[in-house]
Length: 315
Image (cartoon, rainbow, N blue to C red; front, side):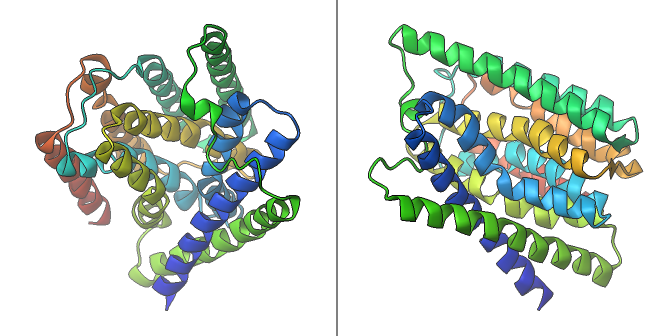
């Protein structure tokens, strides 16, 4: 039964997160906020809402392993699994991708995150630091996007944010917002409580459940998006999706959650999991800087590394 509750919580989280994005996007556009800004901020935060609510709930429940494992495990899965599985299906040509700047930002954020982790706790000081770095990065992205638009070089995705519907009536917008705001905490409660129960059933630390079950579940939207991007030959979307998700996981989710409740860092994270996350992030370098295609060989390697990591964590 506990697995059913965990699955139900995950489904509610994903559906509520999607509803919140649709509602927030359309409210913002109706209020006159430019679509460009909506795409770079509101959509990005909205799609990270499930992970954010999980980490907040876990931190308040004194389950820091789930709060931190959700982020560290998701970032590892985003590289190894989310790029590995599409590589098994089709070849992603990365030579035309220009994600170098975003990748450098992600690696910098990863190093800052690891350095703060060695303080032993993500508290208010760490949270403010992470959120300040996020503001700096977002500000740079907004300025760069505005320069591109001024030159007439506009990314179509920025002009058509996810969930945008100019004809959506106000009652429907309100319904989406209500479903998102009600569903997110409900789904987080179900999933975190179920994860804690599963950890007790098997006598394993909550960090193990956070790094595997919870992290894998919250990475499913990124996996679905990347598979579709790979099939459509949109390698830039696939890699950009992974980099953007990892950046927000590190800075926004732990940044906000640590302002609400301190998140202790267990020794396992410092000795192993954070370095696996860093190593997985470094594996993006051949694709970002050297235009290496992600084909079946890379797909087997990345997916195999992820399976090996999960086996090590579980044993």
